[in-house]
Amino acid sequence: MSEPLWRTGRWSDEHVELFVGNLLRWGVIIAAAVTVVGGALFLSLHGGRIADYHVFHGQPDALKSVSEVVAKALRFQPEAVIQLGLLLLIATPIARVALSLLAFVKQHDRTYIVVTAIVLGLLLYSLTGAGA
Image (cartoon, rainbow, N blue to C red):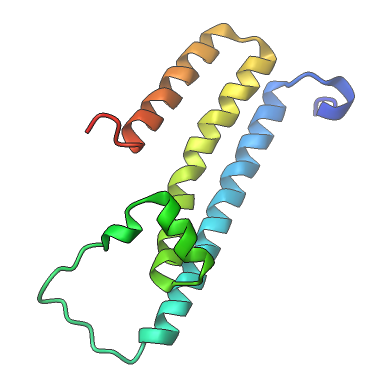
């Protein structure tokens, strides 16, 4: 076990693994909790309805932007809360890559800084729809 980060001020590989593991664990737990709350809200409002699966109705346009999803989730609209949970689940591995980049910068590991920055850039580019 290496020295605590607060004592040494230097990030070891063990510190990075610990932070990344905790980030992934808590990210998935929070995303699952938000999604379950949204599902419970949805069932409390629409649980008695008979589902019609003959026609596919995609997500409404209002739930296709992050800002709208967050705004509607804060008003406890069930579909938006579920969508927010899914967005948090998608954001968790992206945050992991960003945290890894920060750790490699702290470790002054140039090779991994470049590789991780490229991966993070590609993730953000593909998820923001910049290529569309």
